[in-house]
Length: 197
Image: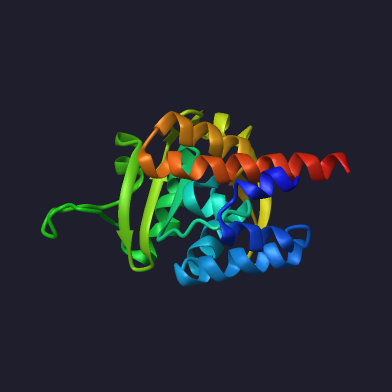
């Protein structure tokens, strides 16, 4: 295990000194999520029973990474009833296409969700990416096989596992994703060694 810790950035080493404490991990995730102002969004998604998985940087944080993220990435089920629930859940937060001209008409409704797949949005709460398909994994059902439940704000949320994160980061292959790989791989080694003990 000490070999794994040697590969981690110092911030991650501090996290792993208290990693066995689920309470400390939940507190860390809650603090980072609070800074993104997404508690109300997660509660609304949960209230409407939207099928989604937290992926990307927020999932990495939930798995113990020291990664700092400024947005929330979700993979969503493309079933018609879920698209209806997702559109309803996001409506109060006024989603707009990120980077689009401000005068471009846009309404994130069921028809828009059906017509598209992956959306990069800006909302009243900050940036939000909703993906119908995750690079390296596939759609919601495939991503579901690489998810586990983590409690955030008292809500049991599906979050991408370390294995799923590693697979997607490798597949995407951007420099920022590749920089995160050694930490994710070390976290996975540590988790596996803890299960053996």
